[in-house]
Length: 227
Image: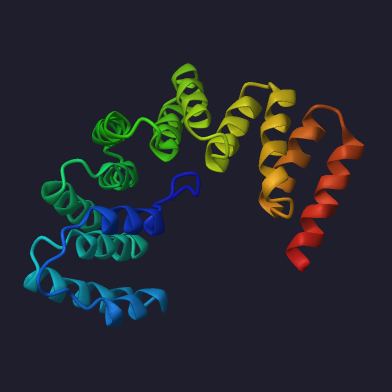
């Protein structure tokens, strides 16, 4: 799974909690959350299922179960759980985005596109769906479409670091090194010690003939890894 596409569980949980109806009896998430935080995903899945068995409309539990399955590499199982989220809450754009990520990993690219587009239709200010859709087009070699959606991601949220990274990768592929470095600079303004970004910027500078700048970035990247 490419790190350019990620599931934002924390944001999703907050969004779902803010919209959820309050049942007369509230589910107890404590044991499941502890198992999840400790990386005990199999145990967490069992605990989340106990919640959904008792509270069939508790879509936060389905979402969290899906995240566990995703982390275990069970992308189909995760997609099914995110599908339950959507079934219960049709306007949950993060559910669509997350299921799209699963479909991407399953190489069901048309289904992934559909879900990313549905997420965007529901919430046009959600940058992750734009960036994810752009990356999918990038993988397919449709660079113009990829650039369009990366631009839209950044328009919707100017601090969308994944979109800047993805667009920098695209510019690098196109040989537009100055633009690529500019996008990586935007990331480093916020995350100045990001070794991956420093290393990539060094490689791009080297291609552009800036050996001194490249050496400086490689050194910073190495020092950051050692900290």
